[in-house]
Length: 311
Image (cartoon, rainbow, N blue to C red; front, top):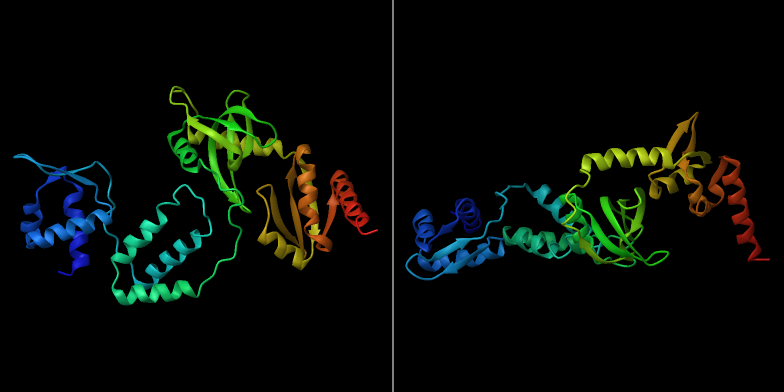
């Protein structure tokens, strides 16, 4: 049996145990004591959590932690996995940023040297150009934990003013170098979108037992979006404008095709007029607003202000 295969089989063998002795590995896999000790060192690197106890009833005690059973991939699948891991390196902040180097190391350790060399060469010739986090947030992992456990997070939020708020967060999302979350402000009973880089002193409020389930939050959030974006709009796009839309747009916008013409449609709230105007100005001459008149006037006013800078 090859070493990589033996290590995988040892993981399976030990995954359902609470404790074991070195001789268990030696007898099960017909290996020497020296080989068993070396394998244990490598199993630690692969994520096997254990500690040792001395004495008559000592041995190796496994920490209660779920281990994934081995999954076998073909060459194309292995390349795709490393391709994706490399892409994630752009996001210098994620809830799992410290795990990526370990994942890559563990995966590489199970591969033949020839495949390792191929992957190293492949990743040297692939480049990703995207927006890295502008201000890496500190509490992504805590927020994700609160989402999954359906808990409320108390924090100091300082985007416009410094306030203490209690949020039950529904989702995390990343856009244009910024981590956001959609969350329900429990004291005011209001939905909002919050920037994670303006959050500090976050803590999960364990004492609040009655919170909304993720299913309840989803229903409430969908209803909020339908009612909040209550001003419909439509703008005609050129072919290049369509390309710009596909590169960058927001959830309240959709692309429609009619009689060979592309339209940017959707809805916005009165409070979002400035943001809508700024967004549409990024299209330059490749957009023509059809309605509403409010948005058209705001857009033209913005263009006049830009023009006045050059007069």
